[in-house]
Image 1 (cartoon, rainbow, N blue to C red):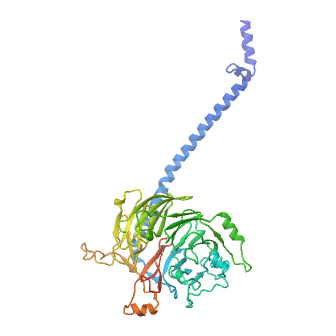
Image 2 (cartoon, helix red, strand yellow):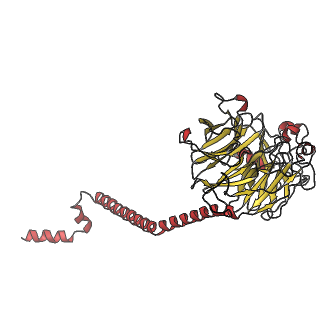
Image 3 (tube, rainbow, N blue to C red):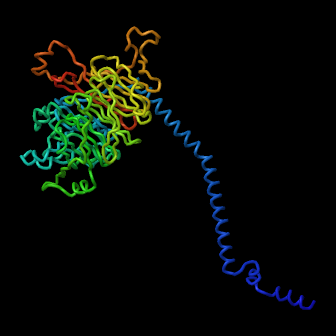
Length: 502
């Protein structure tokens, strides 16, 4: 009994560390097990607490964010459907420029435009001031004395919307000076058909002094960056950016050129200036040059007329004048996916992509066709423009509204959700229409300016007025201002139109 008592006392007097040895083979192993189990339990507890917090926050904020997003989208959609009925026109005087073919908003008050007479200019929609931008010349033109460097930027770094002309670059717009005086006759018959901004809004791509070349400017200063002058053998009709540094050009020669504005080119341009401090630009070569398919079409009519890029699937849609729609995979190269013959295949000159609806809108002589590449060709839906013969000259998406510009100077608004054109709120409400186009909302462009030259006196002097075709239109970032521009539809007539609908 005494031994038992002594044993109990000895065990009671032993340190705690030694008492724990009996439960584990070694103190170190016990320590590792204890620490790992505690860290595991704390990790599980932390994960549980984090997931619980996330769940509670999600229950609290996610429905509110979704509600706010749905409310904003509903308000934008409601405004897009109501706005066309209350738009009013303000015309701008463009001097003696000939037919505005392309336009893009630079900011809330400046729009850059390109004309048939190969003039690139910026219009201030608040003051109406017009400022011309120097054109970029090919290597051969520079070597022949056509002007080194091509001039500098036009927009200054002053207050938003301020315009500053570069020394030695005359405006020549309102004074009656012949625009595009440095361009040849062939160039004057083509001009600038495309102007596109890259996704970040830091670069602008358009045609050069030679309409076969691709010119790139830096924004917001519009300093020249580079010129791609070794790709196409004919005029550039359309441009689409597929990334922040890569653009695709579609040409009348039936080819599509892929161009890259690398960081090296951008950095080199920043360092290069002439003796007067005017920035110069680099010359770049195409990264790829692809011809559109010509197997089942007239090879002399395979002209790339319009491009539109689907950023979600990295697909590039192209329309050619032979009535085909082509789809290409466009990332670091161009790879053909499909070619589809369009039902309405005459005068396919404009194309737009609706991201929210995953469809391409193709304008033709009298119809707008909505094409989903994932669907079979027979499922293509087309709607008549109600103005046969004048042609669809421009088309764009904004929310659920498709804005259509016609050769007769009309702006039509098609509701893609309701699948009908907007009705004119001032027309009498009746269910029966005597004519197909009666009762729909139609905005008509103003008179513009028409040159009464020898062609007009010989062939058109007995006609009192000519409608101005809507060759281009674009919404500002708010969707409340619509810039519209164009000119007479007849190729032999010289004139222009530009207006802001707000």
